[in-house]
Length: 232
Image 1 (cartoon, rainbow, N blue to C red):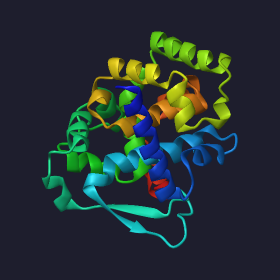
Image 2 (image 1 turned 90 degrees about the vertical axis):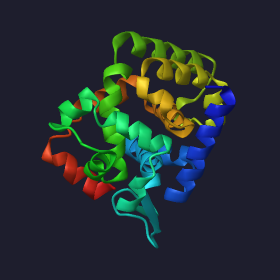
Image 3 (image 1 turned 90 degrees about the horizontal axis):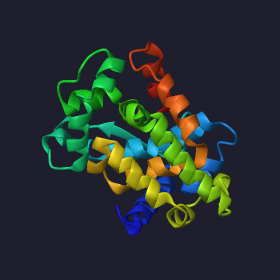
């Protein structure tokens, strides 16, 4: 990944945030106050939209969702799974047999459609991704490497509570993106906005907070379905 690719991915995510929430990516992150979990879900939902988009149709909402505060709802369409050429299809096809995901679900999806239907809502897609990635991203050595990069950005004067696409790209974000791609096999086949979104989350809430949240996810828990159905 090149710096321009990371910046393009961040800007695409920013554009998506304005379509979904009528707010910039930075505003989406900051309006959650001190609630890191809400911040995770609001940003993570954007990553979920990107993963789900080829298989769904968007409907504009006159008022935002009471749970996700989004101005668009995405409904899966069976016929859209016939096209298997998108990177999203290939990435989800790899994800559905991931051992960590299968273990957390308690069963293995037999197809991309099966996986998507199970994840269903945008935040569900993001939770599935987090479960798959946590075994790589939360290893002690990788966490220390990422934390060193974050601390370097902080020492250079970066305000981590007010990160923007441009400041991330200019202060070590590319190095973190490269480390993620090198250590998470499936990430390299995903689009730049997904990689950029994870980098943004790490900058904004920190690797320790992300790993604490990701490690707590149990997809077989009935509360998971209730959460994703309510929050979109």
